[in-house]
Length: 113
Length: 473
Image (cartoon, rainbow over all chains, first blue to last red; front, side, top):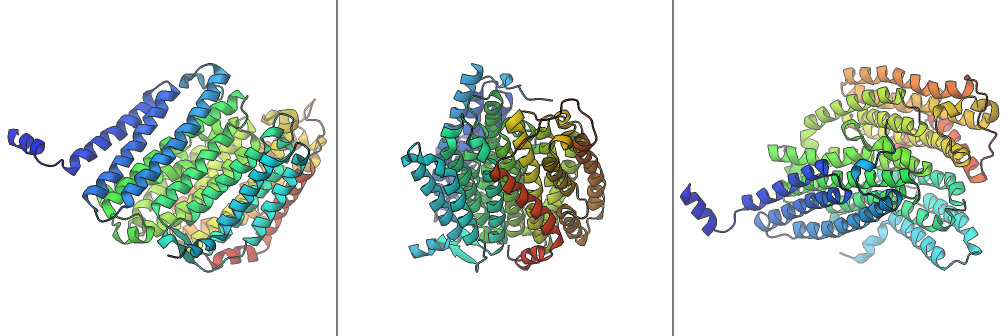
């Protein structure tokens, strides 16, 4: 166990470490999306999920397919798209605040069966 | 690579030209000349529809990122006609005092959503596909929240964008795993190396969730009724017809083109989803009083029927899918058109408000009746033939039990469609909706829809034309 830890710390960072980080980020985002009450926190959780996918793309490209650039470019495009999504989502949340004076998800209960 | 090859993307370029000229007109037009805006938009868009309706030979642009096959012309033309009908129906809404200033935005957002769907349909690479998907869904969420002062619209907008981003980020995570296991993003290269190892299966399931969300199949449908109820009626029809039509076509091409080696696995997934979507949506539709929620559940169950075409994975399935989308577009847009005329003038959307509609508005009631009969699948109308082709595509591959369940559900769906017809024709009402005069563009849209429902079913050349190109996916 001790040797394993020393190997792990002294050698180059293995790909599994990065993938572990991205997986934890992704499911933290899923958990946050389902459990948070504020719309802004829900939005931040979704951003976490998008960024986890970006990390995956970059790590796969860097470690497994270093000859290509596809993963890097995909991550770049995704960052731009995530920015657009955040902008539109925040605009809609501001509109909700103007209408309801609150950004709590529980307040969005005008329509239900 | 010569840049001139980009000019082959006719549909996209002509739509872009329409969009930009409308934007420029909207910016520089004076108050007085703004009344020419809508006629100009409709003429330009009709022109765009007409010049792009003839299929061309298959080609690739940008090293296979953009992959055109002749079948896509039919799908894009169907989407164009649907958008045109919706623009005609939205004419009255955009001329209201409160919305007059937002005309330009409405057209620009609608058409940019359409452009995103074009790219999604023609994608040959996951990057292109993802950009198309997002270009289709981000402007869509602003359209859903278009009525800024309406609480319900704001609520629907938030529900739509948050769940859309959630679904697309799950989908993106799946794409990253697909990239990790195959080392490429091009559809034709993935098809050869995607053999269905356990990581690849996980990637596949993550990836398709995004599309299932767009089509609103049952476990992923929870946003649908709220968003449909909250947004403006013309936008609801856009969501339920255009956005769904594009997504089912893309789902079919992706499953057949990119994941042919795991066909038994995805057939199992689709089997369960089809049964769930049709049954659950039908049962929920029965208890709806609000007609927009009612149509939301009806459209979920129609999406379940479409899965029967996808599950076959054959050329017959492809042809019957595109034909089904064509017929579904005409029928659903007729219903939504009547709904939008009535909601615009009287703000009434409950089924009990429609009691005795035939006495005061016979023409609207008859259009709605024909459309509902077509949705339910009653023989002389096109809906019967489209369902028939879908069932035969599924039977051909041996899905007898699935087709039997779908047939049973057709009877349930007939029951709830007839509830609306009974309300309009039989139920008595002391104070029915007063006599309404729909505006000229809406009348044109009703004529197009009714003719579509009557003609597309009876003249077989429509189906034959579609079937000619159905192999080229």
